[in-house]
Amino acid sequence: RTLTWAAEQAESTDDPRRATEYLTAAREAAEAISALDR
Image 1 (cartoon, rainbow, N blue to C red):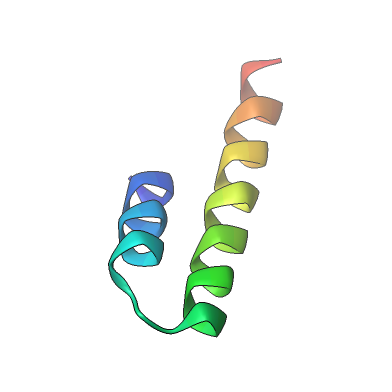
Image 2 (cartoon, rainbow, N blue to C red):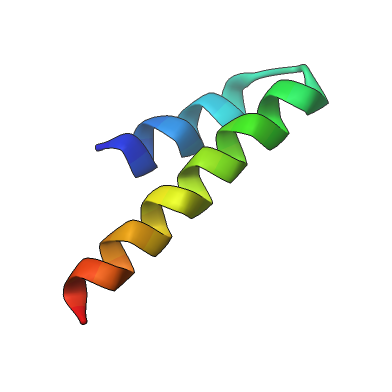
């Protein structure tokens, strides 16, 4: 959920800094999911 939410927020914002923050959160969520899958 967090991964999808962060990606959607990044896509919908017009603020590049905010988009970067959301994409960082999405990346961290993806890394956490990947670590759990190992």
